[in-house]
Amino acid sequence: MDATGTFDAAQILDAKSTFNAPTVPRDGQATASRAETRAKIQAKYDAGAPLYTKDDFRRVVEVFDRAMLEGGMHEHRLAVRGIDGVRVRFVLKVGAFASIKVPGKDTTLKFILQDVRIKHHSIEMMTGRNNSSSDADLPLAVAALPFSVVHTGAMVNKTTGQTMAGRPAPWDWRDSSAVAARLAMFWPGWEITETCSHVWAIFLGLVPVVVDRSVLARADVVCLPGVIDKVVAFGCGSMAAADRESEKRVGVQHALVLSVRHALLARANRRRAYGWAAVGEVRCYAQDAGYQPTDRGGLAEVGITVLEDPRGLLEVDSTSVVVSFAPDLPLRQIVADIARPAALIWPRVTDADGGPQCDPVSPRVRRMIKDYYVAVECPFDEPEWKSSNPVVYIRKTLPWTLWGGVQTNMIPLMLNE
Image 1 (tube, rainbow, N blue to C red):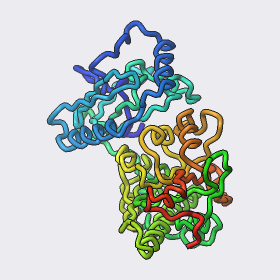
Image 2 (cartoon, helix red, strand yellow):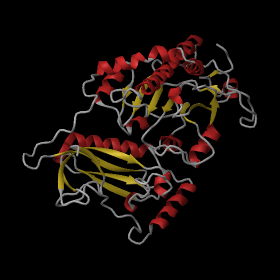
Image 3 (cartoon, rainbow, N blue to C red):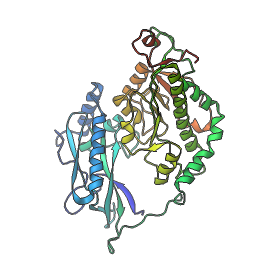
Image 4 (cartoon, rainbow, N blue to C red):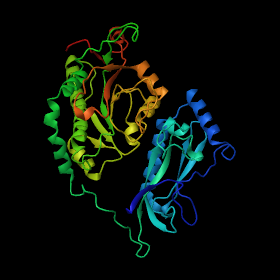
């Protein structure tokens, strides 16, 4: 068994207390059945109660930072509000020891709790509609929460008391420069693709987005929002950990992220030449639970800053472009609650609920796309895109808002600058 692992509140126990367990019981928890709890959650969701909020994510960052800084010197508590308005508190004990009984055996393993992470819940998980058997039944104590908290830990030798090293990963030999070099390998091939040309044209503001008048009652075209100052990417994959089968897909996904950034920088320079409002820099962030330390350094060399969950989510706002391929969180549902980014590049949103297990479509996601976005034609014909089926969505910023003088920081897409 590896010496490292991720544990939830039900697994992490010592002689005195439960780690990460809620310390405040939920209202009605003792009597409400699972079916009743799920029905209440669904009713709140259907009524429009917010599930994800940036305030919750900011609180997570604040408490996690404090817990990691102070280590085992103090016990930290994180209160998370559920969709039903009830708060549940998690207890964080970084640096504490935990004993875990091996299921089916009379054996106990000792771990030291090293850091804390959040495990996001989609509305499908909360209501039992997730097809994944491992996530289908959330504990009732956390069933109404947008996320729960988990500790990661390292196994401790009971005899010596020393932390045991896990099996070395096959990519341990790679350093940051090797990761950056591997990313650079795929750039020339990406640049000559039709998809790359379309991405550049879209984010330079050169592609007219023609839509049906039934979608936009007063115009046939929309505008690319004027001020876009960041690109935030999720689920692009680890180049450090990529094998031969996945490295091209991972490399091309990061290349697309950089192309969006470069096109936005070029667009800002053109706006500046017109005398219009323009950003001086376009920041580029990436969040992926699979990133290794060498990914962080390698991506920094090419202009991408790696952020831990949920810091990437806090960067998503109206002046950002969100790029997502295979995130390990219900990103589309989270974005639908917290922001209306300037543009989205992520898997096509269909009329059916569901989709990827970790990032399913929900009624709120479909409503957001229908009310606020239009799809822009971009081929994505290369084999690397088949599994994610991405689409470019542009926020509906209408030309007449520019011409009527209401908003003056846009370049109409119909203007071939």
